[in-house]
Length: 140
Image (cartoon, rainbow, N blue to C red; front, side, top):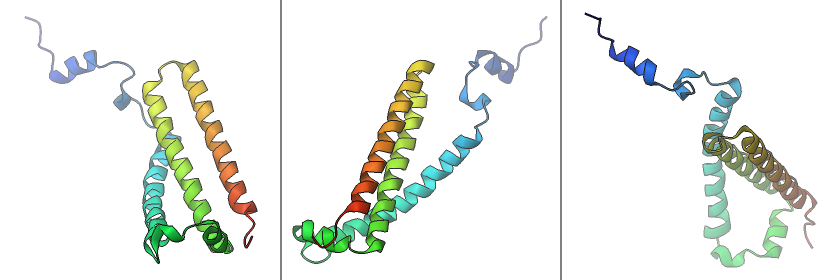
């Protein structure tokens, strides 16, 4: 009589080679995971502060116009606050989309093209947002 296979032996035979549990995460993936948690927490606080100041204090959203933004961005602190929120939101979102691309785009060529498009779009939006914040003429 042949010996019976254990459950683990049967499972190992049926498990596909590219099963995620067999691979150890790369250092980049580990740091990416940490970044998502830390940037998510920072973004929650930044967005809550932003919503409170822009929409709840004073007369609410009715007071937000060009003059309000111009007065607010006259301060380096507010420019830094808004720039940090912009950069963290873009990087957090791009990292999340990168994970989705890794999960669903199977073709290596298509994966590279889609991620290159994502990185390019993220970089362009970051440069445009930074240019608006830095070059905004306060007090005009």
